Structures are given as structure tokens and as C-alpha cells.
Image (tube, rainbow, N blue to C red; front, side, top):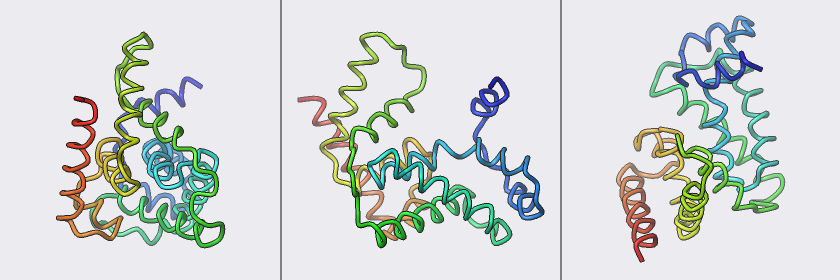
Length: 189
């Protein structure tokens, strides 16, 4: 348990050499990759599915694909962009098979996002912050929420989000900025 906590608390920087090691059967490299990336990938999948159980299933499938396809990784962009592309493909397969958002549970997305707020205590201000965040996210559309979560929570660059979503960079930038303004305006009034 302590070892897992240490891995989770470690800098979640992904070492590109892990993919080559994983391709050669190195289980430790796969474990390190998992602990460095699972929170971001889960958040991304949760923003798409809006359902915790579906996001967990897709996360598992994503890591299976990453493990089996690690030999295909090429150094371009960031490893997280490549991994999110695999996750997105898993989600699209899921949508084709089951339909979009079978059991929408938007509250799960807000719970995940609010957990991502660093260094917030469990007092009344935490509850207030969570309520404000939930309200602010509720006014955004699905695409806007995804862009904000990918940038603010997962730390992806706007260019990477554009590649991942298939949107032009200018669209991602404008949607991100408009989303922040919407959230700010909704909180201010």
C-alpha cells in the first residue's frame, strides 16, 4: 500500500523508454507507466462517458491496448497524447457497440474533477468549492468540458487536444477561452 502511494505521489512524468521496455516484456515498466498515467486517462475517459463504471472498463481496455501496442509507440508529441488517442479509440468502439452515454452520471465527472483540486482541505470551504465547480461545469457543453478537463486536469497542451479531438487548434483555443469565461461569469453572478 505504501509503495502504491509513493508511486501515485511521484511526479507523473511518463518516461518514453518505458514503451520499449514494455514491448520487451518488462512488467515493472508497465507498472510505472500505469501509476504515472492512470488518473489522467481515467479523467479523460470519464469526461467522455460520464459514467464511472464505463470509464473504468475502458481504462482497462486502454491499458491492454497500450501493453499490446507498446512496440508501435513513436516519439512524436507526448506519450500522454498517444495514450489518450488509444483511449479515445476505445471509447469510439464502445459508442459503436453500445450507443453513446448509456448511463450518464455527470456527477462522476464533477467528483473526479473536484478530487483533482490540489491541497483543498475537507472543511466547509472544500464543500463550497466543490459546489461551485460542479455548477460551473454544468453550464459547459460536452466538448467544452472535455477540452477544459484535458487541459486543466490532464495537463495536455492545446495542440495535443486538437490532435486528439480532431478539432483545429484555433477552435480548441477559442472553446477553451470561452469555456473559462462562461464558468467565470456563472460563478460571478
